[in-house]
Amino acid sequence: MTIEDKTLVLGILQLPRLGLNQQQIGDIERVIDGRPAAMQVIAVTNAKAAEMLGLTSKNSTKTIEKYVREGKLVRSTPGHVTVASVEALGKVAAA
Image (cartoon, rainbow, N blue to C red; front, side, top):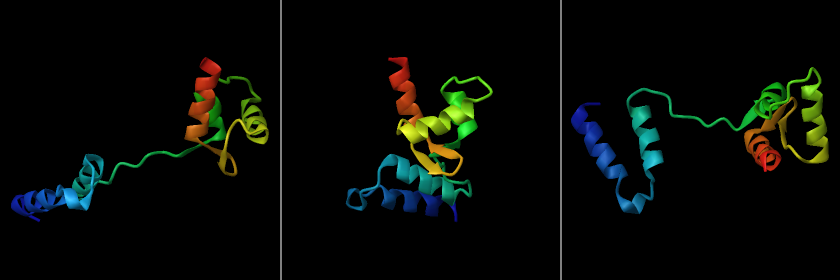
């Protein structure tokens, strides 16, 4: 794809009727350039969640499992919790 083609495609993508926002257009441009689209992390391991919450004991991953059972954190897959739930719990703990 030439620069002129890329400019044309990006111009078309900005048409209001397509309803794309600037983030989506930027992601498409990265793909056109051959760079991977930015991906948002939606889940972390229990150990990483403990680190994010500032838990430093040797039983911190067990504490994360306890928080999952109590409903304070949301399990995404075995051994992983959602980043949103960790951030929400961190905000509650900080308040």
